Length: 450
Image (cartoon, rainbow, N blue to C red):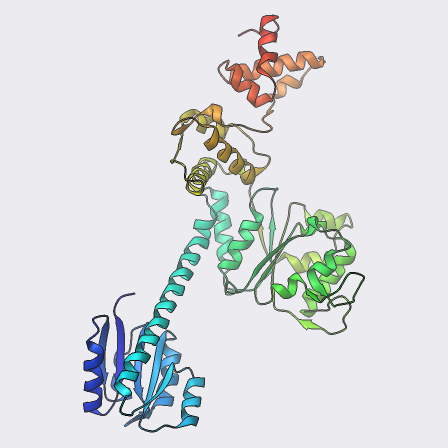
């Protein structure tokens, strides 16, 4: 922080000048004098400041001015000064938000200096916390948190902005690995609930007989093994955001119970008849087509419409064009930083290879591919052979025509990839996950020509 601004609001000129002199000896303080409320409020602007306030002013009293200060700027610490030791007054101003109450006695100047030092420490803590919050806000800003410049991602950014100033349910759809939880987290940290908890839960990962107790909690003795009361995820997320991933996997009975909680905004722990009010923003995600699930009788229609809210559909990575390389470069930077490795770049061949793949695992798969490539590369640049795809069998449709034996298909596939990869046997062996000796044997036997 820069210099601490200290306002002295005191109608005794001798006392105020003396206090100003004592405090001005500290080069970190910038001191301003005022003799009444009107002049002070006209100049009061510092967001981080200390106000030394005489309780008895000619045009106001300290209690009234304290309330105005706290209403205007919350980061000001107010120290009330009075000629008398009034216990009830001290209690009242401290309850109203004053930092301290000081009686004007023979030791008042030392006491003021000491109290101001304590108030400065608190202001510095405010500054640090505010700085951390600003960094958090910047980190989770939609365009920084959800990387990409493609048209489809810009559209997602626009939708995310519409989630910020309301408590509407948000439903996120998209293939596995497209970043649904990341989106849910960004919604939370850009909302007015960001100071409360973000609680994610994967419905598909919890056995259906346990999902109710996981969401709603239970009382001690509710069932065998319930040796203590446990709050559920809804209570844990109270005031914040609950993210239900793979909501489409929830069975119909549990869907009915979830619908009631959402409608009534209260829940009952297992083993209890006492309703517990909840204030939770819900974000749900699924890779399924929920409307299709409704038509097939697998998902309640009333719950479906209850959950829709703002709908965000995440694109497949293969449909995001240049975002593939943008994300790859970002993952390289993050991985190298986290592992204290020298920064690496992508060769033209590596870029070309990254564009050639279909990414069934979407962003999650790309991240894994890039991290492995950073480790596999032998110099400062990642080459195409360092890029390893787990399932890279992107067949030319013509390969599958005709009635051929498995051996003939195998020869055609290997020949196709040899031509595509400049007859690099080692690279093709990695892509197809076969031994390079298999390819060399076929070449030796004349089954494949290079």
